[in-house]
Length: 142
Image (cartoon, rainbow, N blue to C red; front, side):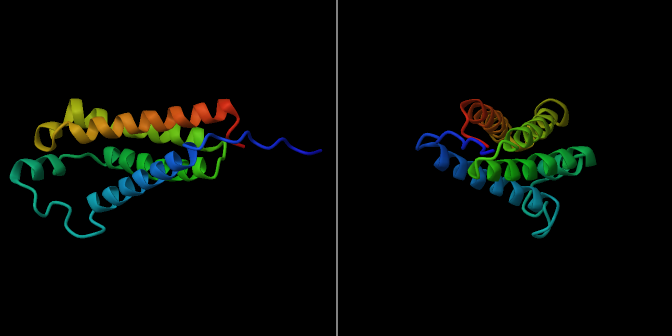
């Protein structure tokens, strides 16, 4: 019994998936940098930024890890046109919304670091989860 091939996606889909992969690769690098893989993560920060960075609880760091690595894996799934990209990108979105919600509403880090990055990351995570759902509904993923 032959299985049906997924429907061909529009021409913009593959570049969008590649952009998502690069975006999430950057997120993974930022996570690894924040946990000190590339040196002291507080080097170059002023006192307010240093205090904000040191107040981050472990569970928020875990949400950062889950969000970025799931985003990278889910984006690879989009590029490969795999249906499992959707649930993985949903996990990424939830983890990143937890992280960014904590930054915006509970941490005081937004005053030290600004609002642009948390808002941009949240919008990006929501758009990628939506794109995966849309691609799945359209039959672009197998």
